[in-house]
Amino acid sequence: MTGTITITVESVEKEYESGVLLLDIANEWQEKYDSDIVLARVNGKLTELNKEITNNSKISFITTASTCGMDTYKRSATLMMLKAFYDICGKNNIERLCVRYSLSKGYFCKLFGNVKVTPELLQEVYKYMMQMVNKDYPIKKYTLETSVAIDNFKKHGMDDKVKLFKYRNNSTVNVYSLNGFEDYFYGYMVPSTKYIKYFELYQFDDGFVLQLPTKENPTEVPKFEPQRKMYNVLKESSKWSEMLEINTVGALNDIISSSSIEDMILVQEALQEKKIGDIAEEIKNRGNVKYVMIAGPSSSGKTTFSHRLSIQLRAIGLKPHPIAVDDYFVDRINSPKDENGNYNYEILEALDVKKFNEDMIALGNGETVELPTYNFVTGKREYKGKKLKLGKDDVLVIEGIHCLNDGLSYALDKENKFKIYVSALTQLNIDEHNRIPTTDGRLLRRIVRDARTRGTNARETISRWQSVRKGEENYIFPYQEEADVMFNSALIYELSVLKQYAEPLLYQIPRNCSEYDEANRLIKFLNYFLGVSSERIPTNSLVREFVGGGCFDL
Image: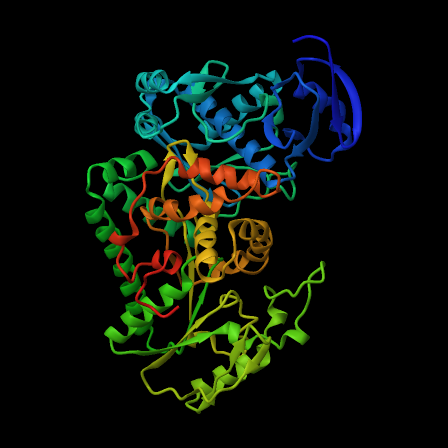
């Protein structure tokens, strides 16, 4: 198609030759943006910058200062890092290079084969990556028939991708190529290596971390801060996955299709139950614990965990009593508001911290205390005669987002507190180079639960998610390393269960709303999984908190 077309960017119209690259238009506009343009939205659809435009179109640009843009940057940096390792070490010397999980604003990776990770090797890889940045190699996408792609993956020894695409209904696969290195990636890429300027490599434990910038500061690589407790939990979860021989979605689908899923579910649930039992034993062995403080981000299964921990505590002779910190919210009329004028229930000032400490101290001293209940309809704290007095073997199991922050429990003796951080730390990868963000699992949990228990549709849940995430970044994650123990509530099989509940909710989101891109991404993500019926899930499973049918009164 030849001739001229009209492109509209931010209400500015300009004529171009038909077939103009988005990249060329982006270059014209780049000086108007503080961060690098890495994607565009063309007539409402997310598009890579290598795309030709042949029709009159409305365009908006996406930079690395956005979640979508930074995810694109990180994905591209991972491709470049893989290319560097294989070029330097040699394909025959690398058995596998796995991108395992998020750690300290980067990705923890593990190298298998006849190569040892050393500071010298990482420095060589870093220099090689910077050479690629300076040479500005294009990152090309091309489409293959699925059967052809599977044959190619077999030739490259990428068995994880062979398994993955064995279960895909799509007739084609998009493959990315970087100067002769080919790989599959789930999501968009930047146009070329010159965009990937900010990264560092750090040796850590038995692997290394590819440290990357954040959308809040996309031109600066943050300091590497080892999160030892978090890492140990992630490492333990990886060992569980290896023991079950389920590291990737393809391996999970193999189990599902072979009718072995019920045994795997029971084993995974048993592993979690053992962990909860171990935590209960540790609490008892301390001998002086009065306050078990439980915190974690949204949709981590904290409530079900609290119930199951309480059962384990009772089984070893202790008497637990649940306390919800939310019952100590100040009356709504006195609640603080955010910058948009909405009530902010995420901050510590939304709680009557003084009263909470007074009640907990009194209970710890053996006094009888009447406990409040917060009425979310009226927005007031109420007292309905719910009294409690602790005996010698009684402990309080306290749940709330600020429980790891000593600012909440400032008056309680640290020797009497036992802090637990609960989060759904997804131990499964799509394949060895495409990790599943922990936030995706939690968002899908929340979409399903909100629709079932609160009548909230998926569009509303997605629209609120960034605000929820902001609260977590400010009030939960900074305190996670202060926990005495961490508990991973993610279950290897759960996304196959959530799939059947989440997909219909996501399909309800119309194309013309801002939440559609995220919904569409999640739909494509769930397409990797074979479904598993919730009928096979035990009634005390953490998954039941979200899909329903559990034995606990939630």
